[in-house]
Image (cartoon, chains in turn brown, blue, orange, red):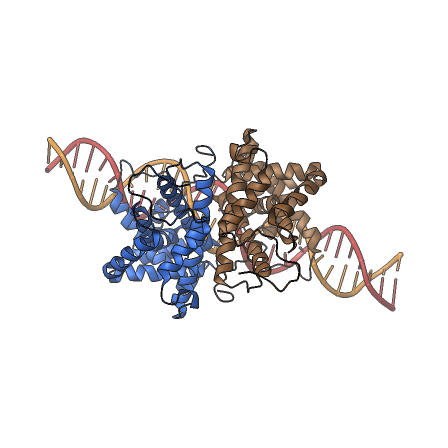
Length: 236
Length: 236
DNA sequence: TGTCACGATGTCACTAAGTGGCATTGCTGG
DNA sequence: CCAGCAATGCCACTTAGTGACATCGTGACA
C-alpha cells in the first residue's frame, strides 16, 4: 500500500485541480452546494430516479460541470455526509493531552451546540437522511462507508500522536479502526433516533459519556485518559 | 432501518431469482467463477481497463448474463473477497461457549491449514490481491468494505448469541463493529504481508493469539473468554 | 482602459455500464 | 417425445461519465 500497509484511497476529488486552481474554499463550497441538492433529490425521489442531469439542473450548472466535481453520482452525497461527522473530527483533532476524552467532549459539545446555525442544522438533517438512505441504497452506503473511512484515517493520526507512535503501528491502526467503528455505530443509532424523534434508552441523559466510554472500550482502555502535560510520557 | 437501527443492505445479488430458481449452489459457483476471472483481469490490467465485455468473454458468457449475476462491475470482485474471509466467519460461527477465543481459533486454524486445497489457495491469493487493489481503486475498495460489512453482521449475530442479548442491542453492535474492524485491519496487514513475503513483527510466532487479543481489546474484554457450559450465565 | 492569460464552465460527440424484452437453448418430469 | 420452465443469448435502448474544444469571466499589467 501507499506506505507500508496503510490503506490510502483518493477519496473523491478528481485528480484535484485544487492546488493551482480555483481557491480551495470556493471549490469546497460548490461541491457542498451540489451535494445539498443531490442529497435532497436522493431523499425525495430515490437515487435511481435522480439523474446527473437533474442534479445539475437543480443546482443551476451544466451536467458536465457536475461530473467535473464528482466522479460519480453516488459520490455527490459524500460532502454532506462527511460534513455531518466533521464537527466530531474537529473535536478529536483539538483534543489536548491533558484532558480526558469525556471532559474534552463535554466542553466542546456545549460550545458547538451554541454555534450551530440554521444552514448547518439543515445540512446535518440531510446527512442523517443520507445515512438512513444508506440502508436500502447500496450506492449511498458506499458514500457513508467512505466517510467513515476518512474518520478512521483521522482517528489513526490522532491516536498515533497521542500515543507517540507512528501511524503505521499496528496497535494504533487497530485502535483507530475499533474506535471509529464505535463512532459509526453511535452515529447510525443517533441518526435513526433523530429521525424517529425518540432517544434510545442507552443515551438517556448523556450521549457524550456514552461515546467516550464506547471509544475507551473499543481501544481496550488505551484511548480516553488524560495524559500528563509534558508530551513525553505516552503510557502504552 | 429495516428493523430498528440495524443497517441492512441487500449486498449484491439482484432481486434474487434464487428462491425458486437455479439451485443456490450452482448460482453461487457461477458467481464465483465470474468473480475469479474478473479479479484476475482487475489485477492484471486494472479496473478501468477491464470492461464487462472482457469479463464475459474471459469466463465464456454473454455480457448480458454477467449483468444478470452482478449489479455492477466492481461487485464482480465481491464473491472472491467475501470467500477470502469466509473461513474466518466459519470459525466464529462454530465457536462453542465453553472455549476461549484463543483456544478455539488455535484448533480450527490447524484443521483449516490441512484442508485447504489448491483452488482455495489460488482464490485466497486473488482475494488478497483485491484487498490490496482496494488501496488505489475506489471501486474495489467498495467491494472490500461491503465484505467487511457482512462480517460485521455475522459478528453481531455471534456476539448477541454469546451474550444472550438481542442483535439490536447497542452494546452488541458496538462490540461487533469494533471487533470486525480489528479483524479487517489484521486482514489488510496480513494481506500486504503475504504479498511482500514478509511477516510483520507483531505477528511473529502467533497470529492467532494476536487476533484473539485484538478482538478481546476491541470489545473491552467482553468477547474472548470461555463461558461456563450452562447457557444461562453471560457475564456482561 | 484595453488586452492578455488563465481557469472555470458550457457544448457536443463519444464510450461503456447497465436494463428491458423477446427468442433460443437446455434440462426435467411425465 | 413433448410440455414447461429456468438460464442464457441477442439486440435495442437509456444513462453515467469522459475528451476535446469553444466560450466566458476575472484579474494582472502596460
